[in-house]
Length: 274
Ligand SMILES: C[S@@+](CC[C@H](N)C(=O)[O-])C[C@H]1O[C@@H](n2cnc3c(N)ncnc32)[C@H](O)[C@@H]1O
Image (cartoon, rainbow, N blue to C red; front, side, top):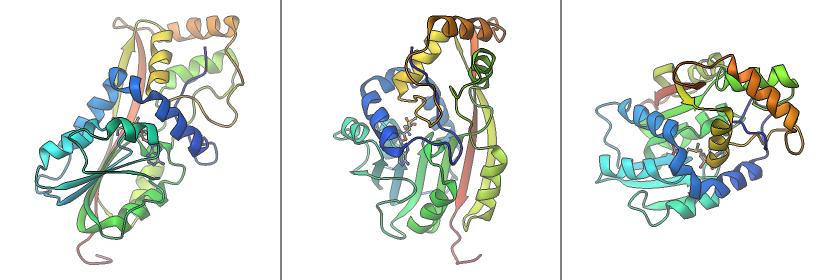
């Protein structure tokens, strides 16, 4: 079994080409296992300011395009652009009744003009970015004054059961660290955007066994691609150790996997420096 996980802190992040390749490979399987992603994206949609009426929206890290379709049906008069770093994901999403434009690009260096959109929606993508400050700067740049950024991301504590279980087995990097909530808070407050809401909510999924969890992470493209990950396949003895260690977390519904989800809604002031 290969190691699986999600991205971590600046300095310990995977190569972006590997991230793109991994998500491209996962494009076909992603939708069938994206229960958490659906729940989080819908929760984020509910947090959009009630008066938001964009003419141009951006679905950033759009994946298979599920939320591009949701944005189009919510804002039928607006034009939408989907940006993703994984060409395979864009190919999958193209041709659907979602975005009007599909562009390959990086959230830290958006391929969009200044003040070109009035809503940025980004769900469970920016945890892959080592430089969240750059993400916020880019959002500020491409938003029109008064425009909003709504993001959902993952913070420290995510998949702690898997991390702690691996820790008991060999102490290697099988599950990465996520940016602490305090870093999200600090970077949002320091940005030129105004913070309307910022909160963390745990989402807990349950699995009958560890393999169901790790297979799902793989189908999502959420492999452990980080420097420091163990090389090669996991040996039978270590795997057995992992299964045993994870059992300490078992609940009546099954084995829990906790995701600490940060939701933020920020606005570009109408007047600069406001
Ligand atoms: C977990 S998927 C979420 C997809 C979609 N937003 C959803 O909720 O179903 C994460 C997506 O972010 C994309 N991604 C990762 N790093 C990115 C970056 N730096 N810039 C743009 N997209 C990125 C991946 O290619 C992948 O499609």
